[in-house]
Image 1 (cartoon, helix red, strand yellow):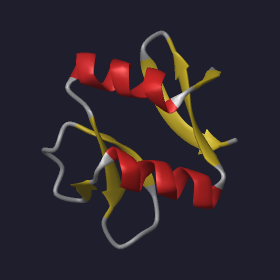
Image 2 (image 1 turned 180 degrees about the vertical axis):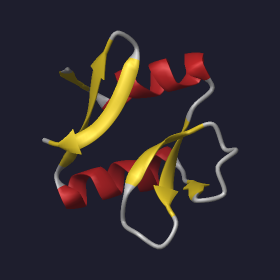
Image 3 (image 1 turned 120 degrees about the vertical axis):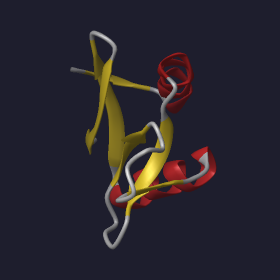
Length: 70
């Protein structure tokens, strides 16, 4: 997997119909289509703030994105 910028992640997410989200009851972040009740969609600004605070980054491989430690 290769680390990508948030701008690149946003482009991929837009193409796939994904949104940034927070896992309810935790400080976990991931991408969602908005259909999972456990994941609350958040703004890109909120998502970026959590990534910075927790020292996380978005990684991509073959169109699949994952949030991991930077």
